[in-house]
Length: 407
Ligand code: PLP
Image (cartoon, rainbow, N blue to C red; front, side, top):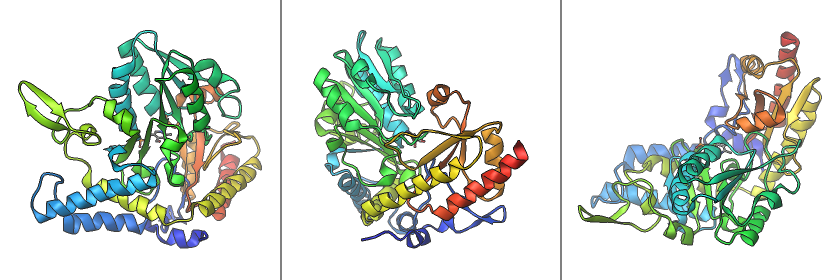
């Protein structure tokens, strides 16, 4: 198989529109990706034909809906080379990480224990673990990053130790693009602390192809559907079977129980134990459609396309006078974040929008990264498999025009 970006683009209707009278250039896929026809059709089919609540119904529509919903779990499991019982549906990465921080954190953390995370984590990893540490008297330790945006030499060995109970690490940073060597971090963790778990934020990893979290050395792996061509409101917590079995529930309600009485309640096995209440049925079915669609692609060819585009983007952006890239790590994916001398990112974002170009400006929910690089905010152009060189050329042209106005 090979990769034809124009053929892929034809599958994404939203890419083909004008914004402010100019053809749209969508360079904000790290925030949320566009959706292919396959996903839109799956959603429409569900709501037009198969709609019903799942699991408890005996009627035909409920059975159809349940089949489609559980079929989505099966598809996600295949995408992760995992078991279906290891796939917990959540609202997204944020909810998945809060689930682990509350349920696992509540089970294992106490005074003297340490949670290690990196300086490049998204707030959705930092804040739940900070809250868990405050609640249970544990200590947060931070893996500092170097000037290129990679974890600094020696930090992993220095900070992960026998007191470590949790290592919470982002696979691919949304603010820098850095891809962390999760496997090595997991190996170091296992060597020094036998009962520590590795919790991976995979939100920016799964839009770039199937992934095997067990082979990565993860105990838990979280991601969001909306960043990988699926609807909003659905995400996944993958947990190693043996970890999920040990983890207590976090939210109580329907579907997560085995039996309820006023004398006491017993809980269902995973994944149901962690899915209280009516789930996001249509959204899960949309996620199933997205991963099936993704699994039909040649990911080696997609990676070649995306990596060549990133290198091209770096080269073109470096031509802009006074532009400084934040995040130039050797292992990097799909994100180009930068600051330009004398230009406020919000002004730049507004002017390039008038040229039909969507980029994101701000702290990208990674304030410690901004602090590390001494900037209040950056401009971020992010790529997906449907991005093109011509779009990067349009971006650079628009930046040049904006800078001439703003300086
Ligand atoms: N982690 C990373 C690296 C992200 O980029 C994001 C979203 O921007 C999140 C976590 C949070 O994802 P969500 O808002 O879908 O829960």
